[in-house]
Image 1 (cartoon, rainbow, N blue to C red):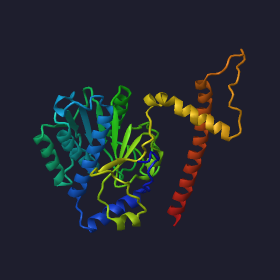
Image 2: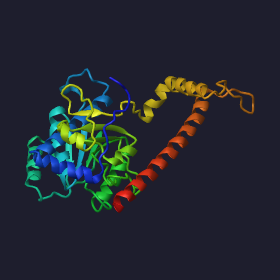
Image 3: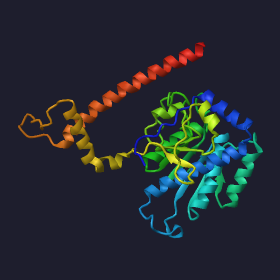
Image 4: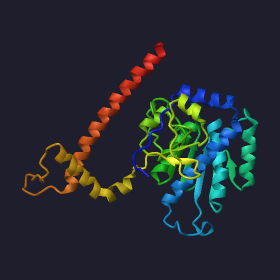
Length: 326
């Protein structure tokens, strides 16, 4: 399997909404789509937990119990989180799973059924607080229909997730990192950047700027609709409902472990540019080691990427202005 990023296409807010409406017209219902979405999230989370687990050869019942927190919002994104919680309890029966569901919605009777299904599995569903230590936290607060600024209690909950992240909790966002604009990303400058994003059906425009591990889930889209919305379905392996689409993603922890290949690539690039690859001497006549050279190289690459991102942002602004005027 190639390690190159997988091209899937991106949906803006309007197309994401219209796609859902087309699915409803094609015979799907809310409960069915929510079940498929939640299952995809659970599979992605299980894969993340498995990657972090050094005891993969140990039987499930003998593994150290995982501590998983789900933050459910009042809408469909929260429903996806409730479904994911139930599936994760099946995947990790010894795990300690809790759902914080501070604003239960009566808009859809199905939400109450999802809560009942969770509690029947021994999952705690409460209004809060988020006390305790957690291995992983699922952010299923706001989806692609969110607009404006997060209000209480979710503004504080997002800050709490950021604090948890600093303490080592892996944060997984469902479809959209909560508080982000679906088209433009973190325009409110909250600083919230989950470790993992699970895009549902297809990535949204804001995912272009997402720096972490990125999955796509939802293996059900009819080919005709995929073509209509310029979506390229990823080559899901086997019977999986989810797939990581940036397999070359590296955490800060394992980047240093790959220094050899990084430096080889650096040298190749320098040679291709016709630059002398000999080590430069510093003021004291000592040779710079590879790390110093590579650090300078990374700074230059980051500046280049920043310029490219700024140019992309300008292009998107021009396109948005054009759509607004049409």
